[in-house]
Image (cartoon, rainbow, N blue to C red; front, top):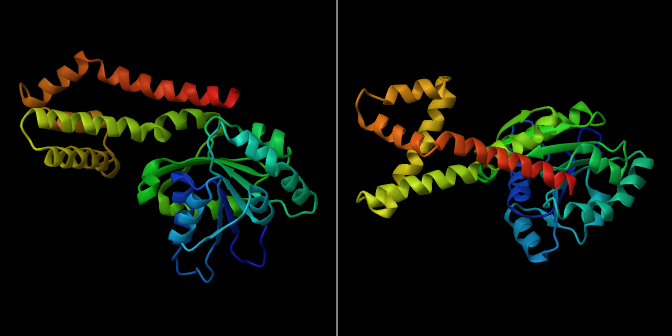
Length: 283
């Protein structure tokens, strides 16, 4: 780990949407006390992808995952759950060697289903590991990221990671046993919302509104409704009732949604994603 109050060296294994979003947040740290920029590196099986990601945020590219494990103070494991076993097997010898020399890095995994204990079973049981679950709106600073840390992670590193992630949107902590549920809710949730927006826009087109306007109206409606929940602190049911006049248009639409088992279908979608996350951890 870095010392003398300097910023940590950040190495990201994988340069896909999520890894890029998180490191982009670290790269734009413009807080008043920021006298030294984060030193950021990417590595990826697709070298061109890593180069493009690095160039866009003035970072650098490393030649291998092993080099990332040797260099990083905080190492982001931004690969799919199916790829994580081979990545961990590759970097484990380096991580163990650094731990033995007293220069242990912190591993930050965003792989669905992979528990801290499972990661440590490969890298070493005393290696500090933080699990996070971000979502795609992190790319525009409107994301939801949830994190949980192993007991070996120093409090200052947890705080540092929170600061790094703060540029992606809201960051919250939870107990590890809830991470699979978080994956189903906020991790997969944006896709469910996109599907809803698309369906609303299709309905607008069917009613005669142009495609571009229908999509714009639907997206802004969802954005505004979400902001109402967050900013008023009122229960969604109460906000729904504010729109629902006796014998009006809204109650007619709500009836159609209820006849289509809208709420139970949404619950089942989140539940299916939650259960799939648990399956990925077992495979």
